[in-house]
Length: 70
Image (cartoon, rainbow, N blue to C red; front, side):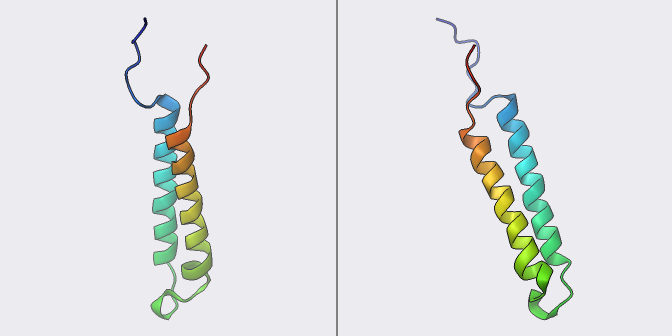
């Protein structure tokens, strides 16, 4: 029995998580750049939330990604 890799996630999982966190941070930065009152411009209501959603989807796949066993 080979228990060499006892970590819950592999290298690819952690890379995807870092990418997801960067995309989420980018979404918040985009929303903060909106110049309309109360953030009701295109950046605050449309673009920022779409980028945030993509970041959370990347995080979802990072958690559930399972590399092929050789």
